[in-house]
Image: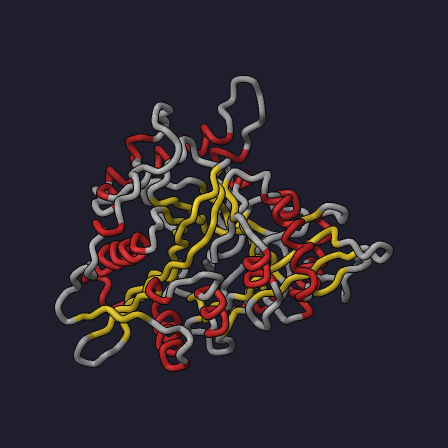
Length: 434
């Protein structure tokens, strides 16, 4: 998140690895780096006490190939799941957040806007819109009880929030119903109250009550134990603004006018048959996406209802475009991005950074490079300042060519109560979590 452009990028130790017989494989290297990080965090006395009590991959098990893949703990009968909510410190109470209610949605929006993820220098903070929150939290089959808030009893002020939504995620050959857990946010003034572990336990309890025993989540920090680690890349669309607000820096020996020229894009898209996705395209896009995602080790198992919800365009939330052959009208390619602005903190001239995040892209006839260049062009037409992408799926093939620069942010993917023996490369990951 707002990991700023072009600083650290790829760790030096992996930059010059040329494939040779004796060189370690990429996954060995990432495991070595992970092990090194683990040692550093243990040395700092930074023991993950809470996570060591949870059914997640543990650092001590890294590299142990005797452990089976799959659930770490078996399901328990639902009658044995704790029926009462966990105890909060006694000034606070649980609330189920009805995101359909305008008033409740505004409270959640305000909590997140003022207290959610910031970059390390406290210059940018995610600013999810209310429309985005409603989209993110109400997929097919969602449970209202999984939208969990914490209020102060006396003032009724909302001071913490966590959510889950149901998803079918395929891990290698097994499709598993999981909760995608997101939006864990505690008010800045309450960070010392140890609310986060009890909130994680409470969302887990409510997920178990629906007979679901696995979850997926992401974090910018290393916890036990990532199943994959990805890198954010950023493509300037409005370089002057990005430099003015400190998101990126003017390159060495570069002037502002040369920088603007470097990132200039064509006025209009170049691919014949490139158009906005429409409701009647859902079946064809679903087939295209399912076929494409089948090649990755971890990916969502989307049906038409999911595609309709997650990928049909919604103004200021998600944009999707496809290529329909001008001759046969067959849909051959697809690209999408979602809208997630950041508040710019403490800048007198600008308050919002408008960011597009690459979502799901499928190329079968149009080269991916050309398809994504068209995506950049439409994002620029829609006044986005920056286009962000993770190096997941086949994204790496276009990042450098289309002038994306590596950010200094990593995103770690985690599975709860599901072990995979060896971390998956970013390019083997077919899953984008919001």
